[in-house]
Image (cartoon, rainbow, N blue to C red; front, side):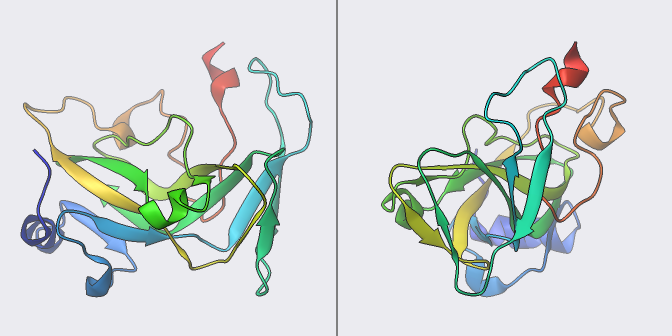
Length: 177
């Protein structure tokens, strides 16, 4: 079951969903629009190794925008910080973004109950496109969980993405080995 706009507002009131900053005009019928934050990152090496810590370089998106190229993977971040305690958040790209050939995630569109952070975006493009900090980039959809969650994400000792940050976070796959 997907939460309606009314239910999202109720759950924000009860602090089961946190969105900062929250702006009522970004609330859709059954989703909340999120925006591209000011930071992007790229990997330092052309060849990535899943068993090693692949370092990234962070940079701010200039006011005149930044042109993304199809030959690169970019890590972006949502301007909004979110917390979800009773629902599973899904992040999907907005249709207007998709129609520009921008994908905002490769595989990580689902969050976990207990996730508390800005969302890192795995951005790729089909052709060169200029993007801007603050532009609408995606929408959060909340699904009801059936049953009690024993260990929320923010309480898992194995959770790799709990450190609060406004910058994109690189892959921590190397910690699995």
